[in-house]
Image (cartoon, helix red, strand yellow):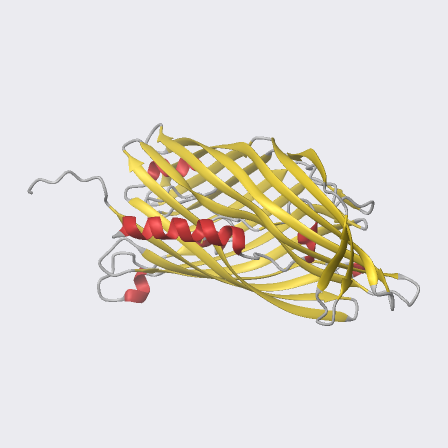
Length: 415
């Protein structure tokens, strides 16, 4: 049964990852869009902390974790995002429903294998600037994003130490449509850009845990993503256009396409985290992520007032399970999660760094009679600022994920 679910879900996510508009952020105009991926919803509910070598939950941030899986695992997650976009004197609301990831983990003795598909970044904005009767008005629309298909393997070196590596194939398409015109003048100029993105990168990781006092254990995680290139194949088309009676953009005169290629540089990234706790009972951890300044400006989104700096993220979080083996009280078998996250995104506009901060909570609900579980999470945060003519995004994300766990490769004793 679970295998049929996996095949169906893989086909669904493959289609939806291309079709969905995964963000409403005006900051998705820059670079490769708004980076959405922050791990599974279990991890996100703890501010991004993923340091325990879990036997039934996949850790999509560190491939060393695959070696700790005891059951074949399938996980799928989605989010309902509500965002209030606020600038000086103006505000607007937007909602998006997205599929966030699909992954499968297989235990193979001391080895573990993980593979799946993740919508990594999204572009989704509609911006309009209005001038006077003699000034230019502009409208900007953008859709698309980048996806990541990954395959990784983990190996348990000792009972407490694991290592692993992921290979990621990044691919996607971004389309932007810019229209410029003068008030009361029917005809303007439309610029259409299509960008195909592709590239490969690698992620290596280590995880270590050990008893330090009776039931108390120390947990840690370290992983490194190598610097990589993204090949951007650009197609630009300029045309004369106008708004028709239905206010739809109608193309009148089209010039020939202009094609070009550019290599975008994705910087290397370090992530480390550590914590203490009692396995399957409680855990508290802290994490730090550092990434160098990238070179992600392309022909269509390169502006003089935008630059990229080194980015960093600080996380604090953990979980508490009153009694995972309780038979009489379901609430005691549930896992309660919480965390904090503060992130410098690395994007600088008008000399203002764009920062992102959030508070997260969540709960894991076991499915009776199985090792599977359903996880719910809420993330409330703020991104950006209203100073320097920018936009502040206040958001609330409600997430749900499913983790199905079974023992697959069991040899039958009876036919």
